[in-house]
Image (cartoon, rainbow, N blue to C red; front, side):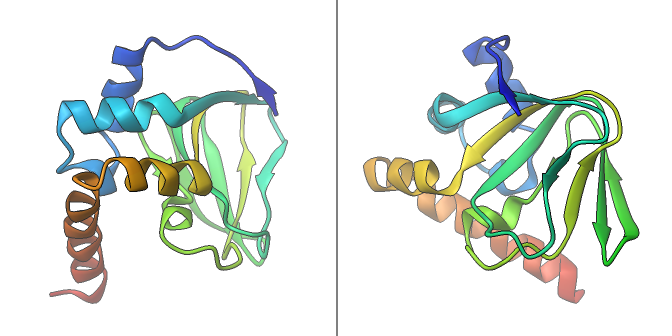
Amino acid sequence: MKESVELSPVDKVLRLQTVDVFKHATTEMLAYIGSIAHETTVSSGEVIFSENDLSDAMYVVVEGRVRLDKERREILTVGAGQSFGTWALFNNQPRVMTATALEDVHLLMIRSDDFYDLLADHDEITPVMFRAVVERINRLVGE
């Protein structure tokens, strides 16, 4: 993966607004999160992370498409404005899927360690995140 710097802080906030676990965050909170989001590009065919790798970061697709596989079977394809690997912010268990770039991809990457440091400095973000996580879990279990 190659680091690149292309998005302005405002562009990062706009991209982060699309992430479901950030949906209750204020613009100010998204700006803090954007400050720890690193841009990276991945070439077509390159593996971003593999099943059973340590979960250490989440990703937001700026441009391109990423295929998520479990045991070599396609589960989902994510594109611009979508996120994947989000649970890495809450749980450092091994990855349950492999993520592969289907074409050249521009991503925002938020490392778990950076996110925990941010929460330590901005504890107002924590309840907002928990609210979104609880909503996501309720959707998954059908409540």
